[in-house]
Image (cartoon, rainbow, N blue to C red; front, side, top):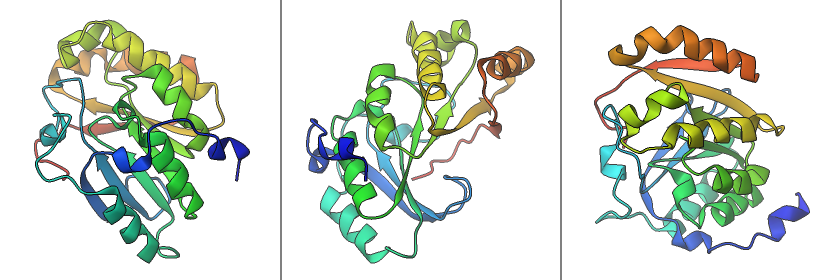
Length: 209
């Protein structure tokens, strides 16, 4: 295990606010059998979000981190990976230590992120094996989607940071009618940036958790 994993200076994993969990999936980490941990909280308010109950920073019925690790302990040898999703996982300070703990249990670590916090994302990349990065649109079109000025610059900054590492990357874009006309320009820009895997997905209206 990389020695950097033992020198993480961050809030403890037990502080991670978990709003839900999927015990088994074959689609959230390509090629791996995985469990998904849904982290609570997201600062963006995308109109097509299918996990709106994960947007508030806290939930009335959180899942304790000890419950998560107890479950994972029973799944050693049965699962290949654990994916941290959300919400926006990088919102939470306990993410890095949670990732390290999961890795030390023998699982690969996946991360679903919208690239909201580029610097925080960079800090957890050393503990990440695969990233599913949500690139919603060209940078200038982001505020109309997220309701947050500067959100596009943050997301694309996150993209470039992941591309500068050896971490496996899949870029994902949710196709909504109002953005379909910009899709060719988006695909072209992603290709020029060096993205090799770009997955299109249809907007869903039902929650994943």
